[in-house]
Amino acid sequence: MGQPAPDLSSDVRVVFGAGSRASVAAEVRKLGLSKALVLATPHQHDAALGIAEHLGNLAVGVFCKAEMHTPVHVTEAAMAHVIETKADCVVSIGGGSTIGLGKAIAYRTGLTQVVIPTTYAGSECTPILGQTENGVKTTLRDPSVLPEVILYDAELVRTLPLGMTVTSALNAMAHAAEALYATNRTLETTALAVQGLKAFVDGLPKVLQDPWDLKAREETQRGAWACGTVLGQADMALHHKLCHTLGGSFNLPHADTHAIILPHAIAYNARAAAKDLTPICDLLGGTNAGTALYSFAKSMNAPLALKELGLKADDLERAADLATMKPYPNPQPVTRDDILALLTAAWAGDTPIE
Picture 1: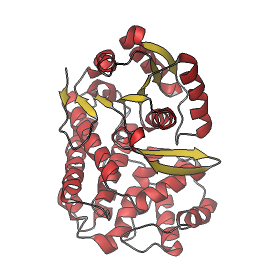
Picture 2 (picture 1 turned 180 degrees about the vertical axis):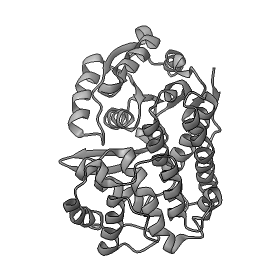
Picture 3 (picture 1 turned 90 degrees about the horizontal axis):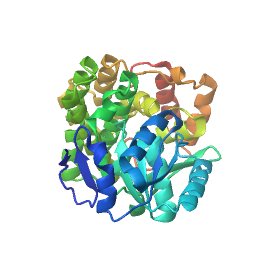
């Protein structure tokens, strides 16, 4: 039914293939487990019930209250279900919101995770968990939050709305773009990043032309896997810092925010890391990786302005303050004035400042 992905020094079992979700019961049995709690967002309630059907008597419950940015209070509600059902594993079907909830549960309990992604976010490939409490998003890295099994079923992303397809893909591409100039980058992570970027540059236009093209959908899923895997291996910088600030403190939608900030953050860092970012220009053309990504996003009808997401002009000063509060490694030195200028351009939807 599916084909395992190449092994990149990881114990994660990764399967690609249309219809692979039907093997979820077999995967749970292979793990020696028998009490699976299915996780989803309210919007994907029906999909969760479908997975519970595939699991049959291995399913002990369904919890469909996952939210963006993994709020701690939602995790605590889910934990009550874990305890009540005596679950020995969680099966997460969805995007970053649901996968984040599964990771948060695993971090607290050590439970095994089987993940069935329905977006291209790539969170399923990383030992990284971002959680939000009292309006502040914090991130941790721990091997316990890395899922044990990932089932990439192209049929599940075939119905992903085109708008979400584009923003989710750009979210994934952001991981690879920042990996190109990561302080701990290696030849292997750079090759993986370029592989992921190429899969989306080649596959995304095909998906937009025919959303039901399973071959193109699988190509983009392989891009998501590569971009997500490199996220788990390379340190992120300005782009992710800005997106965590905007998401955690202003409750902006995750993928849309990443899509909008990506070209601006890359243009900013191209001032110091143009050579490292050359692969993006090689794939997309142009001489500045940030403006090349902006043109690509625009051609894909991606959202371009933070104001479209509900961020107010009055919020920009506070966002700049929060994003520069603590120093972090970044190719181009980060100053409040520069970040405010970057955010202002992103708020308006302007071409990135080179």
